[in-house]
Image (tube, rainbow, N blue to C red; front, top):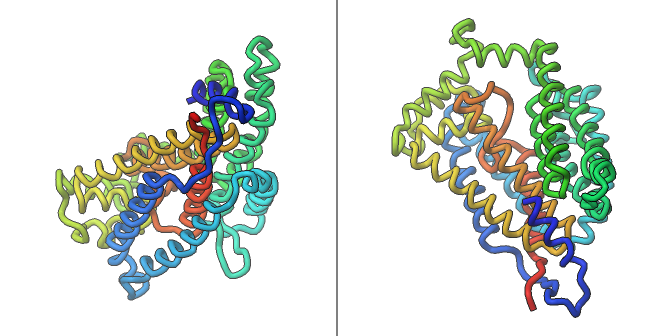
Amino acid sequence: MARSVKDKRASRDLPASADVVRVRAGVDRPMLLIIIILLCFGSVMVFSASYAYAYFKFDDSYYYIRKQIGFLVLGSAAMVAVMNLPVDLIRRLTVPFYLVSAGLLAIVPAVGLAEGEAVRWINVGPITIQPSELMKPALVMILALYIQNHQEQITDYRHFWNSSKYGLVYPSFFILLVCVLMILENHFSGTIIMFAIGMVVIFAGGARVFWFGAAGAVFSVVVFALIMFTNYARERIDIWLHPENYDALDETWQTTQGLYAIGSGGWLGVGLGNSRQKHMFVSQPQNDFIFSILCEELGFVGALSVIGLFLCFILRGVHIARRAPDTYSSLVVIGLVGHVALQALLNIAVVTNSIPNTGISLPFFSYGGSSLVVLMAEMGILLAVSRYSYQQK
């Protein structure tokens, strides 16, 4: 993807007499259809996965789906509003958006609401938000803006240190700030996601592959060291590596019950709504472990369908990025698509016990307020970019 972005840079600022012309049209309909299918599919699964737990906890089977529909309506309004904004206006709002997101993220450790060892939420008036969700698109947008403003220095490969400095060192400060703030929340999974999203944008922007790999290696060493010196994170790793040393009714309960759900699904599943594990076995099944309930109810075929939808989303996103009218727009699309892809991959890996259990939601499917509304606003940005493209005359 890095090569395709660089190859197109020369054509994005061509005069009107060139062989390409900037075209403004409607939003990309295939992408809009994919998003709508994912949202509808996710809402059905939230209700199916949550009604037993909601009845037990609130004596109301519709508690979670009622709130999810409210979030969906709010998110739809945000998506429609954003996708009708000019891309130039979105670009101008990038720096204020990043500063506000960083400010909210910075105050979380002091005034945030705790969940176990992690502190991730703050109250803003009558609502509770998770600033890390705002920071995901903000980080993508600020990196895209930086790369567009310094693309000549980044792609000047004849001068090794100059291109390395502008291509990796300087933009890494944006990522480093966010990762430090995430670590202060004890949000290690979020730290990894932020770093990965940022590196996707930097790599697509033309950073040298050597430094890209070196940065990944250094980050891995730093995260490993932090995990080893943090009881909360170290215990998660140890539970994953040595589950036999922990109580099956306590520390390994969630993972074990999730695997039981996946294994019970077989090829076609037990039927939509017929999951047994959601009846107080998988705790809060509408959240991070909703994929395990989906596997149980819809089986291997249903799980493969969800993965196929995400693959379609990724491929269509790459298509939009390749046709985007400028470097900023292209990199924003790459970053937002990369965010969804990375988070979906990590969530499925957690549910299948391929990596340690940690709090990573499944985009479009997991229950949540700020996460769903922000995600839909991100889709609005993606669709806004799709309204503009360069095409042959």
